[in-house]
Image 1 (spheres, rainbow, N blue to C red):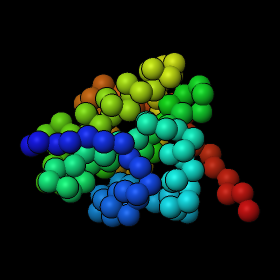
Image 2: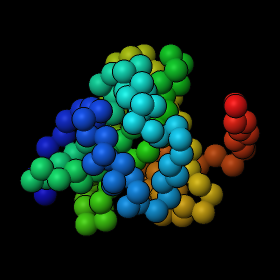
Image 3: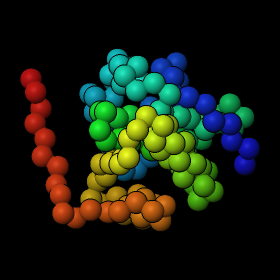
Image 4: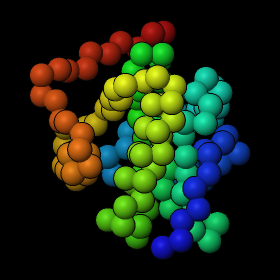
Amino acid sequence: MSIIFSLFTIDLYEEVVFLWNQCDGIGLSDADSRGSIEAYLERNPAMSFVGRENGIIAGAILCGHDGRRGYIHHLAVRAEYRRQGLGHKLVEKSLSVLQVAGIRKCHLFIFNNNVSGIEFWKNIGWTYRKDINVISKTIE
C-alpha cells in the first residue's frame, strides 16, 4: 500500500461524499452539503485529510475544533483498504494538527449499532463513553 496523504479540499467533495456513502455507519445529512463542508473546511483549515493510492481516494477524515475541543465528524476507509492502518494514520494526522492548535481533547459521534466502528476506535486507544448522551434540536 503506497498511500499519499493530502489535505481534504473542497475540490475533492464529490469523491469524498461518494466514499462516505459507501461506508456503513456514516450518517449524512443536510449539514454535509457542499456549501456546509466548504464552510467547515474554511473554519478549520488543514485539519481534514484524504489518503489516495493511484489517484483513488482510499480514506478520508473530516476534523475541526471549536477552540476548546476537537471533533471528528466522518472517518471513512474503502473496504479494500481496511485493517491496514490507513484509518489510524488519518486520525493521527488530524490529532497532530489539533495538538498544534492547543486542543487537548477530541470527540466524535458514533451510532450505537456501529459495532465495528466502536471496536476500531477502542483499538486505537479511544474511550467509549456510556456516561453521556447527545440531545439535538433542528433549528428551522
